[in-house]
Length: 80
Image (cartoon, rainbow, N blue to C red; front, side, top):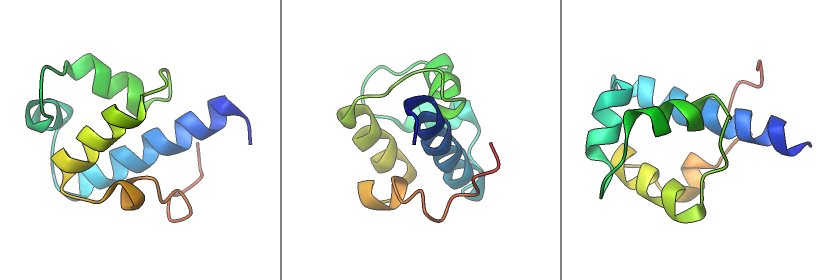
């Protein structure tokens, strides 16, 4: 799997979980610990940036899921 494809799949997974909780990108950015801009959420969800493991951890906490659930890309629709 190419890096760009993996980033898009992880971004889509984050977006799916966010949508299932009926959070907007603004809602999610506000729930993430520390300063986190809405544009960062957009870039991560679109696969345009490579988030650190710490950023993924903070996103998982904000979405109230485990990091392993967040990264469970096997359940993610791979229509990217």
